[in-house]
Image (cartoon, rainbow, N blue to C red; front, side, top):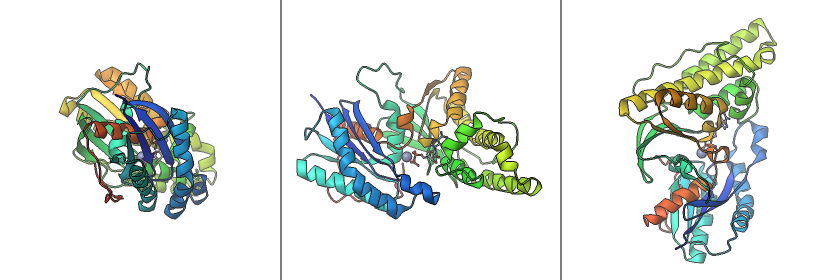
Length: 338
Ligand code: KG4
Ligand code: ZN
């Protein structure tokens, strides 16, 4: 039997559609929104309008590349968390398509989907997939969480950020030194030629498996402000070292908690997910910790780390197998939790 799922993602500023067949990815299309770059952050109203313009072409591209027309078994969409107006576009589109084709409608939690991005594979790909239970460090622009995943649809949140997310810390620190939005990838790039030990920022003393990044962000802001008083060219003369040092601090906070959770929960099957998992230094350090600690490390490919619809389609596929469908009265939820 062939099971084909169309996934739709519109939670923030990327309009995306993907096709998954029997658990394998056939196509993954995305339309980014350049317009927000001018404002230093995502403008919700502009995001909704761009989703409305992009959604039909993106879905058509995903269907075309997969060689599909109307022969899909279900439509999965992001119900939340995210921007309400943005979510409404994907939700309404998915509802309409489900009614028109008379196929099941499947709501997907964006955070859950980021975690399952570790299960995205092509048909003949020989990939080492996570075994249950595994521990996932989910690091995106809006969330920083530690989750124990005991099955495709069973997750337990054991820790999370009490304030800013790791991605937010990257983006806000990038803004302080004048880098464009989103700043995470820029910090990653400049850091490649910098010394991670050049400057030290104090680490938060948060208990359990929770995180905090607002103190680090403020310490960074004051540090830059004070140095600029002494040397007006401080940022431009030291950008590589500044980026390498703040990146190093953020990653150390993340890894310290991941190591603690792995040791205390006795789980050596480790995965990362979310936009920040695209960070090259985080990837390198998690792999090297994994070698030292005999972890089995899972990292999504770059195109599946940041927002995408392949992860929505894969999660939709596993919900479809469990016949977990939504009704037409489902509404988006901006603050949906895992
Ligand atoms: O998962 P995602 O695409 O969207 C949300 O669900 O939030 O994550 C976006 C976040 C942004 O904060 C962005 O700066 C960060 O991921 N990010 C990175 C890198 N690529 C994306 N942060 C650090 N290094 C990167 N290479
Ligand atoms: Zn995301």
